[in-house]
Amino acid sequence: MSEFEKNQLPEEPMREAPQAQGLSDIEAFASAATREVAKPPRKNRRLTVLVSTLAAVAVLAGAVFALPALFPEPEEPEEPDVPDTSVTLLDKELDADGKKIEYPVRSVRVTTALDDYTLSLGEDNAWELQGEENLPLNVTAVENLVDSLIYVQAQDTVDEGVVDMSEYGLDTPALTLHTVYADDAAVTLELASLTVGNGYYLRLNGGDTVYLMNDTLAETAMKQPETYVSLAVVTAPSVNADDANGTVMIKELSLTGALRDNVITTIRPKEEADGKEYENTSYLLTAPYKTATDSTVTTKVFAVTEITAEEAVVLHPNAAQLKEYGLDEPQSVAKIELGVFTSTAGADGTITSSGYYNEQLHLVKLGKKTADGTAYYAMADTRDVIYRIHAEQVPWAEKTYHDFANQYLFLRNLTSLRSITCTVNGKEYAFEFTHIPEGDTLDDELTVKLNGEILRTHEFRVLYQVLMTLYRTGAAPAEPQGEPLLTLRVSSLDEKLADRVIDIYAHSGSVCIARTETGDTYKMTASRVLDAIEQIENYVSGEDVINRF
Figure 1 (cartoon, rainbow, N blue to C red):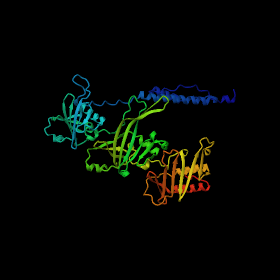
Figure 2 (figure 1 turned 60 degrees about the horizontal axis):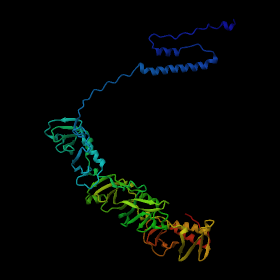
Figure 3 (figure 1 turned 180 degrees about the vertical axis):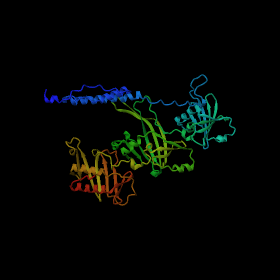
Figure 4 (figure 1 turned 180 degrees about the horizontal axis):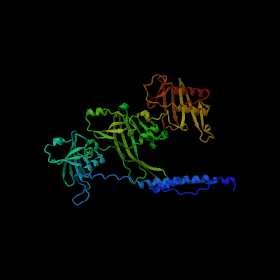
């Protein structure tokens, strides 16, 4: 035996983990998992440590999951039973044979300190507001009231044998509901609000018992009669079931009112009879002047074929109320003609007939805006009701002729023109065109002449673009004065089309005023007009034409 071996201690045998007295199995396992053991050979040490660690984690995790089983949470004590003190006062849903009644309520009279009105079923089982039989009603609102009266349950009985109802405010109830049911039973419910807390006292059929009610019935029934008025101000006509091509459209829209100085502005969809002059527009202004429209503005306006109010505000407004809501002198008035447009086509796809049916006419008047600016007070058709209508429902509300009118000076394709005459500072330049459709290039398709001399085609196309950018920018600030800075006359190859003539006058350093042959007068940006004059003169003198805009 070597000296090294002699000095080694004898190998100690592995001991079992002590089982402590009173330890649970889990505690014993935990103790065993943490006992000291002899070090293994060096080459296996990492693996052994890892295995030991995982084993310990697994054991501890098991202990954690086992804890709820060993130490269960204490059971919550059962809540004591609360006696049911509710009292069913009315149950009119079923008839004597136990069958559900289709219309259990025939009428209900609502009386408050401010209102007294009656809702009743008509001969066709449609609800009517008595005295307003021609006024369409909000069916959902009526049914909410009716449903609350079919089954009525009190929370508790407050007092019996009451002699003086003033103790509960029931000598002058805040709400009285007198309801007649399908079985001809007439029931009266009187409600007075609690002096402390939420809820109501209730008396049934003038009896001497007082019941406690929550807020639900009172909140449902304590409404003004305006609540039950239909909010459908303008409804779209229906498309016939056998019409696959029918589309609801605005046939014509006429606008007037104070903000338009009571001048009528009328717009309608373009028709085939309007001809090629308006081939680049879908809608036409026909009053106060006939012209193409701005497609973005008009399309948005014509997309709205129904108007729904947010609220009915006043029934039968008096003169003071009309003035209060700005409806004594409406700011904006719309006459809306609706219809279903349809067409038929032959075998080759050619339209053989077209037109409107189920046409309707509506008149909508707008007064003041609401305080938050999101809606208008309005009246419609023959209804004697003031509504609140959201601005999105009436996109035409503040639009004028100049908002609808197309901003371009003229909407005619160059290929359809015979000539354009420009008069600048007393000088007249008559540019005459010859169109050659078979030309090899775009410039080969057009010849421009001035006094018989051929001019540069490409440069004229640039000049044409410059003239097109003489945009309308709004209503003229005044009548034009003096001699025009620039006059344009646009002549079409189609002799049926009248010449387009525009006289443009100086007004200020930034504004010019244009007037067309129809009398249409509007403002332009002065810098564009002056630039157009410069480019006309550049073209005639042979210099480059530049489109700066």
